[in-house]
Length: 117
Image: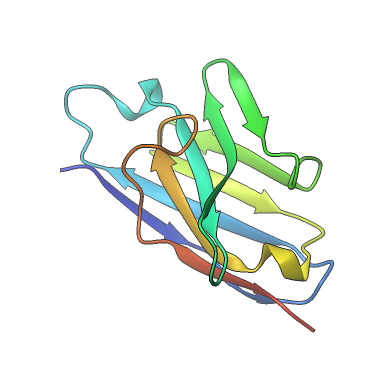
């Protein structure tokens, strides 16, 4: 059974940084390294917003986070990361990692990021 577990969220002041991690496990038929992965978020009272994806072709970002967030992965450790810089109050949300480039596949339970002074 594929499992995704996010960590690294917390409370941070505007302008601050966080690094989110996603530990993936349970890949049997197709190794983790061959899966595109993504991050999506859900702000209070709003729907899911795709923010970034990574595949063998590279990384892509939503305009709302481009230049501030960086996605990366370590295939040897089955990990996906999201570096969040210059955080804004509007970035407050639960952040989920997911399978697939645009977040349409299985997702983890998420980690809460709160940006507030």
